[in-house]
Amino acid sequence: MNRKISILIVALLCALLSTGRAAAQTSCDQLFAKGVKFQQTMTIASQNNAIAQFQKAKACYDSQAKKNLCDQQIKACRNIIAQLRSSRKKPVQEPARRQSPQHAPADTTARDTARSGDRKVTLTLSANYLKFKGKGGDFKKVKVNCNRTDWKVVEAPKWVSYSRNDDGELVIEVEKNPSTKEERSASLKVQCGNAFAVLTIIQEKYKKFIII
Image (cartoon, rainbow, N blue to C red; front, side, top):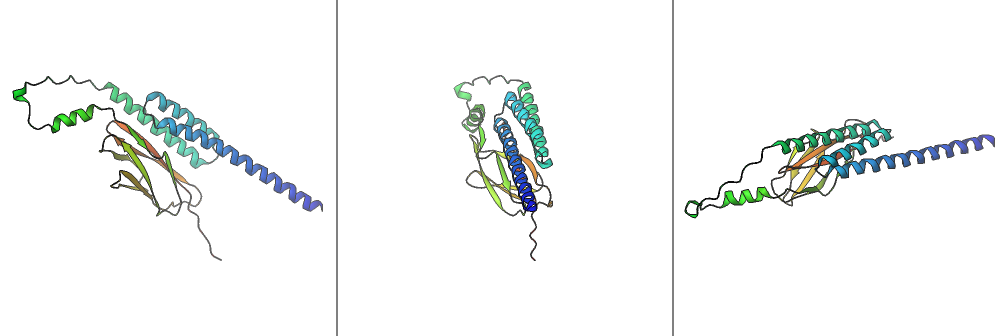
């Protein structure tokens, strides 16, 4: 009888510990999500806010893979800050003088391109992060919303394949995770004009199924 009671107490303690860990991870994920939200706004202040949230999430997480993910996001934020500061230092070009009507070019393509270049570039993604299974082979789509059509991927890990479809979506596929112990993660960066957006990619560890 005493043995049964002891087993019951141990089971209850394990359940309580599991619940506590789950609640802690949920809190950590919330901090990470706040960081991703700040990261999507391309200002120095917002990137600094994102770094602060990722640092809190890193201290909160138990998983080394999640800690590494936070480090990657912090690095991405600092790269964005460097790019923003660099763009501020570029000299402002003086507006071209208006030509007289008799010398105006007949082709208006260059003029229209200049006008479109003067518009503020807006860039958003339909998702901030994607999660894939460890076996690989599946793909997911993310809608890229930009007021220009010349967006492109400028940074991605080697284990991630990507392409652009006719609907203006980014199609992403991942290779099999070689690790059966740790999940892995990385950042994929999209550029449109002088704007950037970061997509976080998380892949679960590879789960082997043993048939007995």
